[in-house]
Length: 271
Image (cartoon, rainbow, N blue to C red; front, top):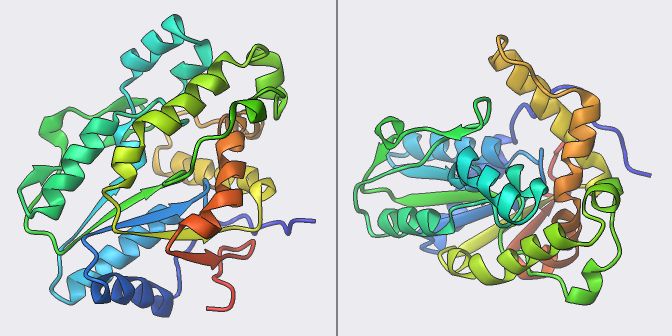
């Protein structure tokens, strides 16, 4: 049985853990650090903490999320018309502009001036480039995302639906085959940009709906004029990510350079 997390959002990781993450990256001359973990794990929180700590040491850290290179809504709507309606929903493999992420990480690695893409999740649109922050001469780039370096599944593993979403809205498997093919084909060049990957491994996929609900409540609090998802909508939404998330839990402990176990409150275990 998976423990139930407390209702509050992630308050942040212990300072000693944050320092260890930064020190490890610097000691290994890491230019691009990947931070992986399922939805709600606290990747963005940890990335921001590492960047803030680095600043106190006179270092510049750029943080980019895979969420910031989502395909814009019109492009996803077109995919939904051309391939499968579920592709209009952002997040799964096949709904990102991978080439843009590669271009930005290359510029950061080389110390060139570049703008960091930003995606407005409330508006479900990427911000115009004129509103992207500019970075240059960074000492470290952090790239965070929920399925970094996760390998594609075998075709035979895609046959049976995994949850109600796949059973009721992807009965013939078109959507999950498209996402799996994109994962195996399009993202490998992006993963090659990552010098080192840290995997934040939570107790299991079963805790993701609760963690994602916490995120939604935090988003609502920060944007009181916008309508957030209900808990039922969150439960459906996380099903878009369940297949690749379970694949991540199976494979990333071996693939990642370091795996950190987290309890239900996102506290590092044995650290």
